[in-house]
Image 1 (spheres, rainbow, N blue to C red):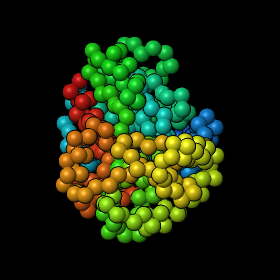
Image 2 (image 1 turned 180 degrees about the vertical axis):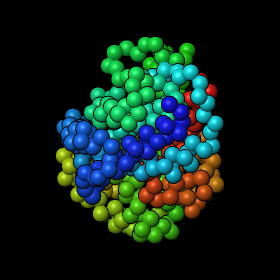
Image 3 (image 1 turned 180 degrees about the horizontal axis):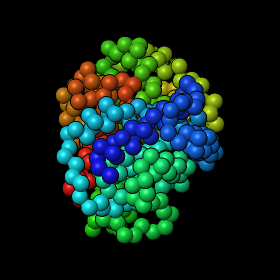
Image 4 (image 1 turned 90 degrees about the vertical axis):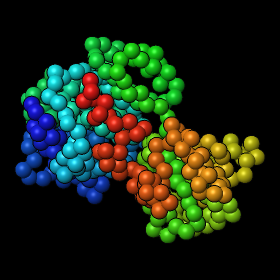
Length: 352
């Protein structure tokens, strides 16, 4: 199986996923193996939501729809065109996946297989329903995938390299056990937005998607704002209003109530609109239902500060300030070449 055949297989997988969107779940004609997999995958979507109550129907379908678009041939070819992918003897790459958002480990899974290697996958208990079925679908599309994808709940053994995603605490464990192997080990990162006070209503409204999508659980979720001195938060809160119904989700509401109570008992000054707490704080990672903010006086000084903390930051929103930053509303729709932690996964894999 060569690179073109692997690309074709994932393109077909993308067409299969395109049947599951936020707007509707509808079986289409001329999708290979639909008779075997459509209803089965629909059931796995439901099971994913039952096993992880953060996985709402909307969030799961948002993730699936995003991957169906990423697997379009134009995106796959653009992504891989910058590499010379060799057809060497496949190596076995162990992938330890997180489970904070639906299919969060799919990019690593895709990267390992598209580069011609074998995937040894350890799923998070929070996100273990959907990917095994998608792997089976790939095996039906091209039988050469059989034997190249293994899922395990046991101790990882017989692998050549590791890609592991976790917290700052688990990264120390990963370093200890996998440090002797070629590896990518990811730690906690957070995303931020820089406001100037000149944002349009549309930009601030789009920022709401960056904040509230997946309940703020993703590393690409904006968890902190930088605002100029004397910033007026009225326009910001008005733009957030479209997300007000999030407070009716019990788990989110419980976090909102708990964090607010803790902050008030500690006599912190808060800004609060009934479903989102704003707290002035120098840290990057805010709890669920809370958004940290910090004032700045000079954008150049702020840019220097952010560069010195680049190992803690996944995304920076506001590309009118810096072309390397991300536009409002785009944090949760990364391209295939938007690598987590800025580490080029394909480059790592083709050098094995």
